[in-house]
Amino acid sequence: MRDFLPADVRRREYVIGVIKEVYERYGFEPLETPAVENIETLMGKYGEEGNQLIFKILKRGEHEKTGEADLALRYDLTVPLARVVAEYRDKLPKFFKRYQIQPVWRADRPARGRFREFYQCDVDILGSRSMLVEAEICAAASDVLTRLGFNDFAVRINHRHALTGVLQAAGVANEKHDLALIALDKLDKIGRSGVEKEFAERGIDAAAGVRLLDFFAALAGLDHAAEVAVGEDVSQKRRALNVAIIGRLVEFVGDNELGARGIDELRSILNFAEAEGIGSRIEIDPSLARGLSYYTGAIMEINVKDLPGSLGGGGRYDNLVGMFLGEAVPACGFSLGLERIIVVMTEREMFPNALLTSPADVMISLWDQTSRADSVALAHELREAALRVDLYPDADKIGKQFKYASAREIPFVAILGDDERARGEVALKDMRSGEQRSVKRESVAEEIRKKL
Image (cartoon, rainbow, N blue to C red; front, side, top):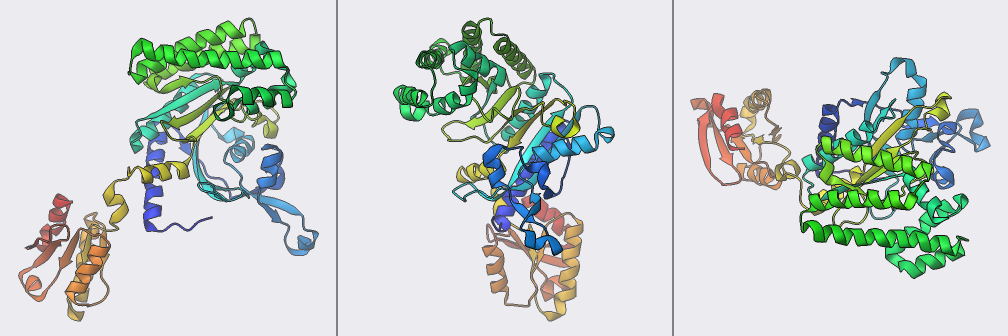
């Protein structure tokens, strides 16, 4: 859990502001939920590991000595959303589109980029099973990153049913699917022989393991073929590769009904993504397997070239709301990783310089004790003109006041000396160029705005 100094807060507010603006352009509405939930609302929703990471709140007052917990800090924003939908179903629209940007808490071991308190930026659509929902959510998340200045990202997409179909077609026993995926996830790190060894240790049939690894090896060959076909055009390569992967999935899955349904839905998402204008961002990735116990359909993740990890992810989860409501409610959502985005943007120097360095457009200096009221009045006038104004509170030497403004990187200092006040003028010093000239008091705001 961290303190955020002014520059940190400005970075966060800048990113959050862009996210809100984009999501609202897509028709999403804001939602906020309490930091604290009843413990039974959270327990059992995140698996065994999640249960251990929930911050529990002990009973209070006369029940304190029991050492029991009845409340807990919010672990994510999705379960509270499901509770809200179940509780206020009659007050919400048929298709509920919401975004939520709030902190969550996890009793995790702190590490680089991993915190016990962090913000999630969620966007969800509830009430529809249409694949338009997946495409729109991917478009909104892509729009956010584009507006923030990212241009080298891809939206990786898979489908739980397609992945299940691949595992079944390979001959992996249903109860071994999760174990097979855990081992497959290490393919890049430990190589084929290492994965085969893990398959054996986890009790996965050797022949099934070979078929599975052969399938993914063939997909790697498709990537090279697509690159040869279209050259260095990344957009065309992605499109060609997606078509080839869909074809290979159809061939491998064969008459597996569940797998075929997942592949059809992937096709629909691709078509709608093209209509949304983000077809060149989509990458079908049959190995993507985020949180399969949680998702019921499409799964998505956004990755940036040459950057480990992701900037966000999500998918369809049609069963969660039903745990509270007693009936199935279709749902699909995506969460952007605010902390991760800020770290990458800071490292890449993607933030506007003025945003990070200057807390004000102009500082009003204090010439002497007799000019205090006039300086306050000038500050008021410039604030009314929609400028950000800092007022120096003490009648220090003017050189010291200039030094203070320079240290805070405030671009202008307004000086109300005796001569300036007598003439109805203000001396305006540009701290960037060192130029100083007098302007009529009524023209100060216009002059500053012109040079900002």
